[in-house]
Image 1 (cartoon, helix red, strand yellow):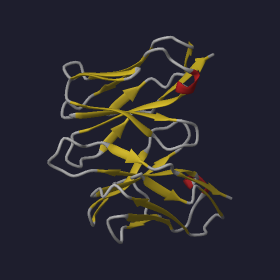
Image 2 (cartoon, rainbow over the protein chains, first blue to last red):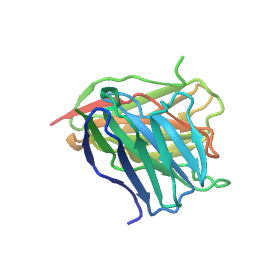
Image 3 (tube, rainbow over the protein chains, first blue to last red):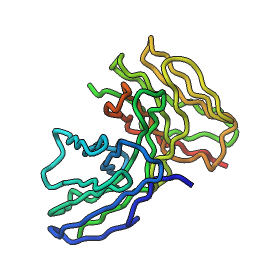
Length: 115
Length: 111
């Protein structure tokens, strides 16, 4: 089945130790998003890619970086995780422009714990 | 003012009840409206997707959009304990503009 896959599902890291979260999709969607979601809060957009065009939200900390080497894969790098970065990280995709399809599909998320 | 407002609940109903979940928004340019269901510690699952105003029905779920009032609703008929989750509304202007989310309503359906 076509889907959005995130690995790992659970990640534990130490304060200040870099971590990379990965996302892959078989939907062939042009746009990929990274969100941060804390308990009982709405997902907060960190950045998105339209193809290789990178768009950073103004309030995304510099500590967060992203890479999209090809259509299928996108990575979230947290260079120096702090305790406040513990959250669920959600990857999402959406489809082509010029159509009525603007649904956004989410992966299962990676829950990050910072010790 | 937030772009999208959603009552966080929790909303507790008995099994079989009709559930009404709502969001209001401020940006009249939003064209595409979505409802997601999110179980605890899982990613959001797309339930309903609506373009512009009107109703859409899918099984026990009905989504309504009233653009004149900037108000969207999700109705769940014959609610089941398995419907217990957080329901997020989301909307966008389209064409890869940003998606705006409500903070989610936590629903508990009691057997």
